[in-house]
Amino acid sequence: MNAKNTVKTVAMFVALSAFFTSASAALPKISCALYYKGYNVVVFEHADKKGKLWRINSFDEDLGARGMGAKVSSICVSKGKRVTIYEHTNYGGASKSLGEGFHNLTGWWNDRIYSIKVH
Image (cartoon, rainbow, N blue to C red; front, side):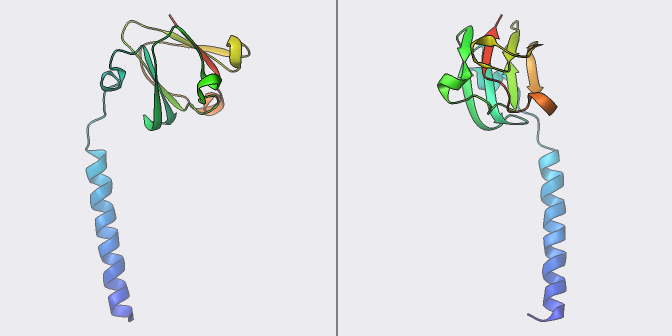
């Protein structure tokens, strides 16, 4: 490949990158309600509702027993519900309360939850 073709290829890549970046930014955010399907809480493996998801309908959940312990990075809590997330199994360790809606678990809480209670 000569220098002229390399410059054309790089220019095309830059143009396509800019197009797809602006196009994805314009996409609407998906509401948590689309994930619930009758469940109280939906937890996601990655931030921004990405990766594997697990739906939770029980009011007390040991995430480790379901293979989800220390894997949750975002959470959707259904309308009218609250959750308490816990650092350890059996509702031990540090805890934090979250209201309805979408939450990215940033900082210390990312990939730390082992149990959850729905209120």
